[in-house]
Amino acid sequence: MSSLVSSSVSVPRLVVAAPSSGSGKTTVATGLMAAFAARGLAVSPHKVGPDYIDPGYHALATGRVGRNLDAYMCGPASVGPLFAHGASGCDLAVVEGVMGMFDGAGGEGELASTAHVAKLLRAPVVLVVDASSQSRSVAALVHGFVSWDPEVRVGGVILNKVASDRHEALLREAMESAGVPVLGVLRRTPQVDTPSRHLGLVPVAERRAAAVDAVAAMGAQVAEGCDLDAVMALARSAGVLSCAAWDAAGALGDVPGPGAPVRGGKPVVALAGGPAFTFSYAEHAELLAAAGAEVVTFDPLRDEGLPEGSRGLVVGGGFPEMYAAELSANEPLRKAVAELALSGAPIAAECAGLLYLCRELDGRPMCGVLDASARMSERLTLGYRDAVAVSDSALAAAGTRMRGHEFHRTVVEPGAGTAPAWGMRSPQRRVEGFVQGGVHASYLHTHWAAEPGVARRFVERCATP
Image (tube, rainbow, N blue to C red; front, side):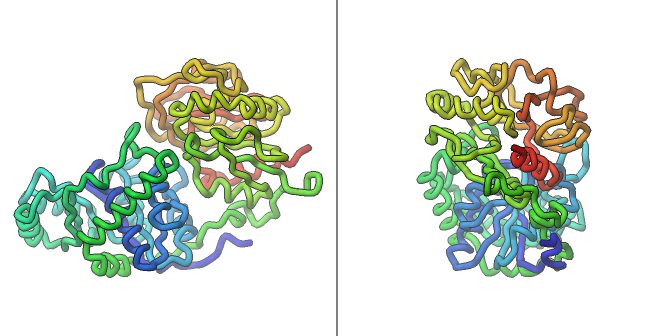
């Protein structure tokens, strides 16, 4: 199967950006997705950057997998193909930006910013402005964002947190002088507020019913306050995107997956899910499957054993500290994970997965695979990382270079084993993580679409008796 699924993409699309974080991007982007989905459109949801949480809300709004577009971790050339992969067959694609529109990877200029991704996608931008503390000044603010980079086309503005009819009138009058269409006005509505944690929303899986209500409220508010026809017309003005759609089999090089029959079937790779482990890119499971694995999701909070026949285990990120008591209480599963590790089976663990493999988390017993202790910390570790594999592992050969992202408020002691997983090249040089038997455990979140070979290598190790 070739990665050249198509040579051009013309799906209507737009990018939702803002001058800064906290302006209401998620409310507007999710609301637009829900409002258009309610009209019967197939809406493709996307998120700029490494965020795992917003795509969960996007998925609720659209009924489709939320996908990330990260020009730092995957490279600028991957943005169009990954977008095309997600948007295939859709009537509209909505891309939620990250931070302020021009804020990208630190010290890397525009790289991985919302503006950068909008240019890569040839997509018009809807600018969401928090108007709660301004009136006429909004025109100067919008003018600055419109004129800063002529290659970024701001096609309209949605004014958020507007206090009254009088306030709206003043804002609209100011915007007339700026020459940028007002596509919508949203009033202050606490109904759509969603709880946050560590700079992000609480994941959908942790508050399913409340999240469904919040998404419905966002959709209703946007449908009432925005000119959806004008928004759709703007989306249809996006330029044709000349690129091939990414697909997992093609990314692996058109070579049959290594999942040669193992006792009559594909190697089973267990993928941790549920409320405690919500941080996972959809492309990881797709790559594992394309490489020949049977990927089976399980919930460590409920399931007392690994999926039958598990030959490998992938435990991604999340907030295990919120579920430390429940994870610890599931002793049968902890023992099963420890036994799988002892057998030498491949295990890939990122961030929350690292904590789960430790001896303890905040004093509560975990799997005990690693002779390390984890605890909550007051310090938030956050940012992109440029890394190189230090030790040969089931995931990567020594010397493999990958870019990733750290996001945690926990500490693991020691921070690295005798065979570390990664050597961080920037922003500071250090080693981190553990390679032990078949285990590769680290705080670093990576996107395997940037280096599909890691999925192939992992499945090959799983397929080896």
